[in-house]
Picture 1: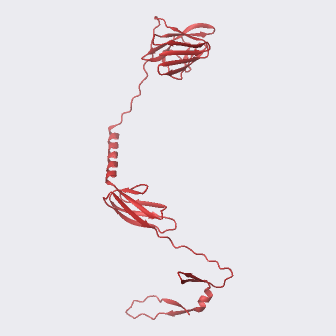
Picture 2: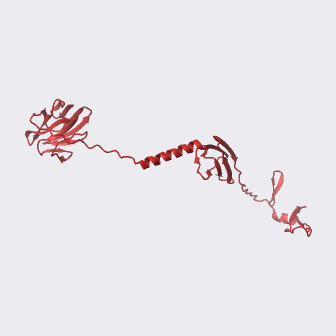
Picture 3: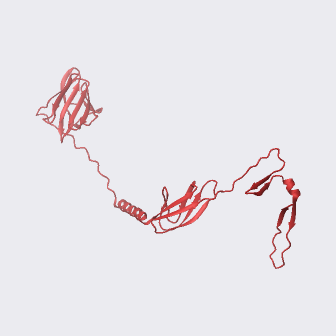
Length: 271
């Protein structure tokens, strides 16, 4: 692993694979060996030689692995650690030197980082998941597609049955059986239709909604009487006083005794 130190004096590069490196720092104007930089299992670690080495604001009492983004303080120098593949970059704001370590220095690498245990999925969850997957597959392969075409396009539509149908963009995916289709649109009569879904792969249903009767408002300012025609026939006479004067009420004859009596019916005849 190549180690580069960038500081006020420039850039210094060393090879860490050749052996541990001794970090010499300036502390209160005096240079001293403060820590050892070494490898274990291909990963870099920092081992303090005294109690004046800090890593991420914690005093180091033993060796510690170096990770990308760590900040170390050795004497008067502050180090920013960068780890990228087989390269280790150290940036410092004060004087710092690297030298080959002494063979007499005893290295004590930190313990391996704990490997997080994978949570085992219980057999019950596996069984439930398998059953759900089997149920979904059974529904998909057993259901039929019902295409519903309603004119005009409804505001709301739902298909009710013992086993709920799955609404899709153009209709429903449902198991064979009898369902009740509800269709609603503002201004139209609600439509309720019983639909039987067979085992056919695709079924199509075309429906038309009936428009509700509307209201017609007539304003005849300054007109004393008017007649409204609908399809060529008199639909409305606007002058009710004249209508009452011209109307003649003729009752029907009484029904025979053997006929069930009904309320009398009157017919208005215009002269």
